[in-house]
Image (tube, rainbow over all chains, first blue to last red; front, side, top):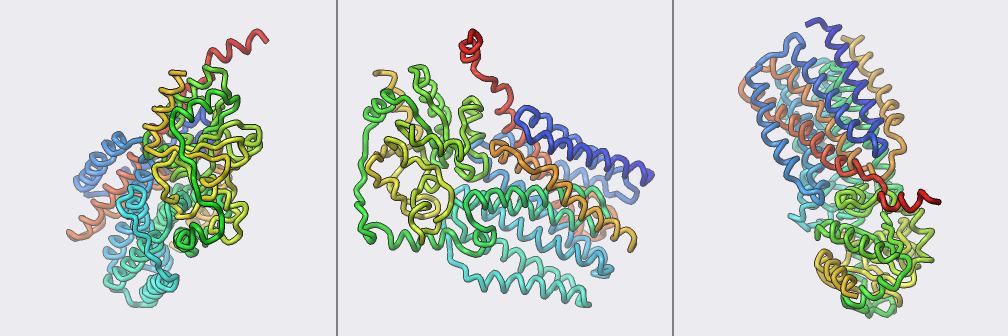
Length: 460
Length: 106
């Protein structure tokens, strides 16, 4: 097949990627946008299969079949609440593919590659391996299969990076053994594991977003090495978009990306929590309340703001919450949702869940808009959110989250917090909101609690 | 060869700006689907596996590359499907007809 035709098809694929991504910017065009990008991908794959020198079709078919057999059922079966983990896994396998391809290409050439191919191959291998292992650890943490949050001295990660880079330099200057290359992969893999392990759940959106950008970048580097324009363009599109998203997330938390990875948000938070209760002279009694009380408060309110968080996702409570909201609306109460940009475990996590529960788009308020209205809100109903409502971010200068923009729920007339228990949030930070004078707590599983409240409201 | 790598580097640089330009200012509601959609696109590394497996010799290389192709395929297919499922939930959420009916007389 002529190279011109293949490059022509690649250009069609890029146009479709770009058009598709542009369409993803608006809710009305987003579905088609995703499909347009998928068509672009199909064209890119077909064009590549037509390329001269592409062979071993039975093996290609085998790989495609295995991938399809795993990809389709897992994408179909995953629950909306588990999306962050799933995206982390899909991201990880992409990074893993980059690392494997780099290694195979290096082995194939017996290490005897020109420098301008060797450098991007090593770069792709390092970033791909970091992304693979980092994403898998992120999956473990999001799935709550591990709660371990070891303290890793920055020196260890720095050392691993130095080893990976040092061995890479070794390879480029003549040590062309595949064992050295394996050493690079192992160092990068360890770095991926150890860099993500200490990070608390509150920072996971930033982590997944960063690793997403990493995988894109590594794919682009592999494209440079393999002299494939499609890989370069598509990889860099993702690298750039992932970087923007990462920066937006980090900005929303008033943290630099470096401090997420090297500052140990969770570690500092744990230390602060250990100093925690009682030491600062603040009254530490909480008021717990009953579902009947909550129902009465809600039904006498004029304005209710619902603040959902990860707890709502865990409890699968979004539909019950939406039912409660429409029941209140039927009684003439104004109900809106205040969505913190990093509520949940991924940017936009809450929006997806509430959309699933048929909550109208215009009921969801972003942070700035919502914060203007808390002062004239009668009841704020906080459902499984913690750190994003923590007033310590405004007032306690040595708090690990100091300066992070929060939802000012404490400014509303009364606050009802639905919580499983008195444990601190994923970031491990004490939340003074719970001890506030106008705050009461309703303990229990979010779905069950909201269901009880709904039943009580209906009975009134 | 030098020409190719030079061209590749140009494209690499230009694609960065393209990415920044295309993605900027997305409503936060769509951040998750956007992340998942771009996630699917970097599955394009699948092409790398397709290109390398033909010329590659030896069992180990073949095994590595079949795994790589499978990984890439999972990334692409899973990524697009999951994005489609998420976005499907935003579709057809028209404002409540009753609310519109109330507004109309005004």
